[in-house]
Length: 262
Image 1 (cartoon, helix red, strand yellow):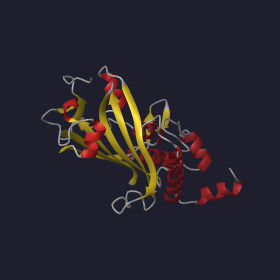
Image 2 (tube, rainbow, N blue to C red; image 1 turned 135 degrees about the horizontal axis):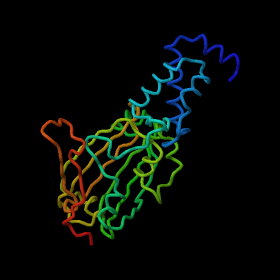
Image 3 (cartoon, rainbow, N blue to C red; image 1 turned 45 degrees about the vertical axis):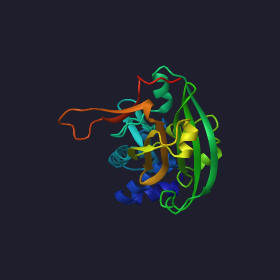
Image 4 (cartoon, helix red, strand yellow; image 1 turned 135 degrees about the vertical axis):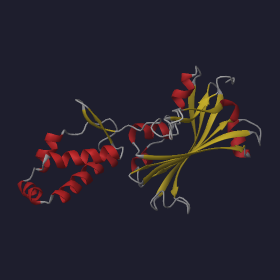
């Protein structure tokens, strides 16, 4: 480290130093320089780099872990978190794993991809920047299993603009590249519109399960997704005890084993 920088760090107040280290590490994670699964420098290395006390480094790491940006593993180190589809109270299974776990063959098709300015209702999510809009279809064997409309904020995830998503779904790509720290979900039912019916190959007005999900990292919008499933392929289940106010297995959409996939 440059000697002048080292001297500057040495004279910084503990709070200022804590904030600087936190900003530096967050920046590397948020920018993708440190991708999911990346092993962070250990505390001794960071102490030497920033010329600070171990307590300061430990406080930074604890804050990043609380925000969901890193995972601390005993004797192994600290790693950038991987996006986990089962982390939230409402679990939404990875569609690829869910389909294949039931003995069906999963496939995916990109229907459309476009970069455009954020609309009026999307501006806050996208920080006033552009969004990448993806429309795609997930299959179980040869049957349409889920129609998906997804927005990705290019302010938060600029590298997504360089991905064509022809071979990988937006959700799968984000899971591998952009961990999130907060998510919201909404499940509902609706009658298939002409567009949804056409894509899912069902009758207009037929029952459809809808799942809406928004994810953030440190209050910065990452993605918004709307998924639509033929009602006969999915059911909702929950398992909990009387003492669980927010069960880990609450309201799980599952592939209906009684439904034919052909």
